[in-house]
Amino acid sequence: MVVKSRQPVTSGTFEHLRAEAGSLPAADAAFEESSTLPTVVDRWFAENTFHASEFRDLKRLVELKERQELTISVGLPTLNEERTIGLVIRKIRDALMDRVPLVDELLVVDSASTDRTVEIARELGVPVRQHDEILPELGAHVGKGEALWKSLYELRGDLVVWVDTDIRNIQPRFVYGLLGPLLREPRIQYVKGFYQRPIVSGGQLQPDQGGRVTELTARPLVNLFFPELSGVIQPLSGEYAGRRELLESVPFFTGYAVEIGLLIDIADRVGLSGIGQVDLERRIHRNQSLPDLSRMAFVIMKAVMAKLEERQRIELLTDLGERMKQIRQEDGRFTLDVREVGDAVRPPMNTIPAYLARRKALRS
View 1 (cartoon, rainbow, N blue to C red):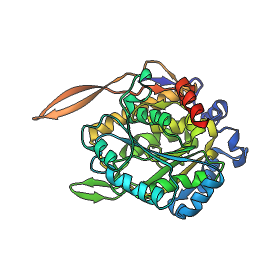
View 2: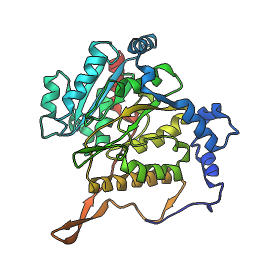
View 3: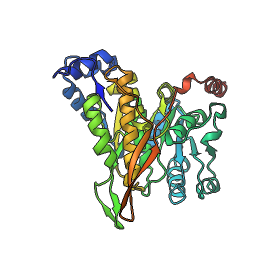
């Protein structure tokens, strides 16, 4: 892939592009107009980084929710998560629905699981929707991003939380930690989770060795091309929450790139000051194989390049391909596997007539 910038690259390139593209909107004026970008990021990091323990007073969160007359939905995307889905549901429901009325709605959005995921969720009394059956007139794509986008149609809450369902050490803080900044800080529109990510290797837990695509692909790209987001600890984390009015106004990549795409577009809409991040402590989950991680990195790189081209920060001289060649070794021989790899893009949900009609009906 060959890229070139529209202007000569100098020490002031990113400052110039940032001002031109509006990557720090007017909402960030509170962070001092005269500040340099590193100062802005440092200040954001200090002011908008939280710890889940700050929000463990659940009765206080319920009071804030009721005072603001908000409703809260939690969406759980699933694909063959029979080992963990039951634990995830029980932890969230027991602590945040039965003991205190913080969460109003819990919904599983499944992507054609072939194991007992759906059966377990229904046995626990949680409604399940297949994502390809939501808005069927719009067709269906494979991928987590597609499930999240379509879940916006189904979920009713003013605040929406998404939590991955492969988490082996799930705790209620994975939800209330994300909700806390939204309920306490009106300026914050979107909250990302971050955590320590140990990896299971040889049957043993290796601390701080997870998040390989984040550290080797996403964070370098963000630092290079979207430096205003360089303080986001885990741009690819699968646990995040936002206000419906924001989430319905941005496009969604349909697969692996959904997290990086949302982060970039949301920063454009609400500015750095409208984004928060919360330490959820530690997350243990199913680790993916190296070939799977390579495909994920490929898709994320494509997404970042697409976002740069949209903002006229680069001009691609060739089209981004949909195929990736991966090396496979078997019986001492090397072969090439060609894989179709790529995300489609779904438009903002608030541009979909059926969604607007549904929201109007729910309000009436």
